[in-house]
Image 1 (cartoon, rainbow, N blue to C red):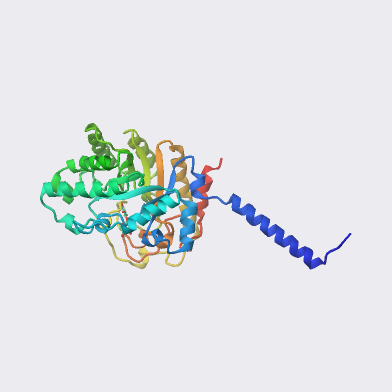
Image 2: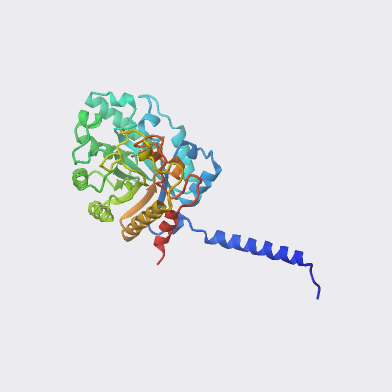
Length: 371
Ligand code: XIL
């Protein structure tokens, strides 16, 4: 029998076993999109640099984990329609091409919103002019991406937390009819796209009742509305699972889909009592309000993992009602919650850390599908 020198045998053994375990590791590697494939889309909001695929590691993470995308900022009116006669479609075209190339479900955010609104629209006082602008804005954008953008946030954040309608240029100039009008225009421009009303604090009972009333009014006019987007900018302890469940049931009773459109869980102290996401509010950064500038303590990491696990267990329980769960950002390093509602904090709200590594919360979410 031929014998090989010891070091050669050792080398061959190590090489073989490391190749083998790498392959095995690869085929068993979990990812979010496949884990929830039979239940709902798993999406992420992507920023300008991610749309342009500037960072290879981020790009790999996006395409390997998510099967749906939302543009974090570039399709808001101040960016996409900066002047009356000028649309800026460069980035939104790239966003859509990115989604198509990666066979993703593409969500459009957002058509009618009081915030990040083009300044020239905010100044309109005449009702006929504002109606014409809404028509031009919605028809132009939705028809450009007809058959490509799968669903739209037609109206974002039109209801206050107390259930009254938000005072915006749209409400002040056109009255509440602007809501149905927006949906009517979007449906005409792309009859096959799913049309959503999207908002934060959607588990708050007063707001929930008001949103339900508003949707019923739109439905009573025979105008198409397909879904409710619950943003999901939540905290470690609030809202409760029970409040979220009640809301899923109440909204789906309208005969529409429910999507979680902007999910993130802040682990930092909140400077005010209410749990919303009113982006115009800013507070002062103090050490007390930014307790984990270097790293997240294990105990909080565990809490976040448990919170995400509880939430995803609920989502799975109601998967027949839920169309999509989208995280607001890809990783902690780029989350908007590092700058809102206090600038310059270090928050840890997502499933991947700033180095793009999966956190405990990632595995706890993946494990919710295991018996
Ligand atoms: C946020 C973006 O993440 C930030 O980059 C931007 O500065 C402000 O808007 N509700 C929404 C989102 O519908 O569009 C907001 O996104 C977060 C709250």
